[in-house]
Length: 212
Image (cartoon, rainbow, N blue to C red; front, side, top):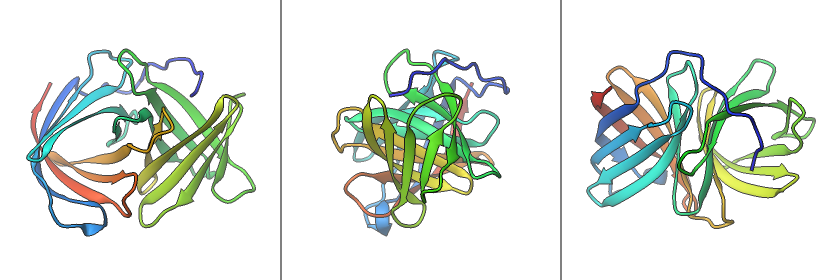
């Protein structure tokens, strides 16, 4: 998707293992049938993404996560068609900085920036990169995303909180993709999540159980 050099995060590194209990959850659009369980984050490679596992009362889900260095936010992508996950932070000039990783073992976290164009919701890559990203609002906190690159067009979805946006793209052209944005709050975290084919967003409230 993107040909970028790996970036070593210069901020104090987050833990390599995190384990949370899911205290409460809602489904997209406020649908009934909330779930409980546990979610773990493991990062064996300091330059790579986290491997994420949800063990829920209704099954097991896995994904990949990228932390925005120096912040309380982490983005997670999941689903069998997941190709990549990214987290963006908007700047005062309307552009954004991002951390990104492919959703494969031994991938490395990279960084890039985007700048707004004259077209609403369109951003061009800076630093000599070719292509653009288009973010289309899809309801509260929700965006449908498209990356238009020399290698082709990638589609995905995003969910936001304040200046931060979690994004997940399909690597196969399929539509089994989901995305979560977690924010650390006290001894736990708040999460907002989306999945293709369903309107709106769901939530998770997490409590930390183990960190190292």
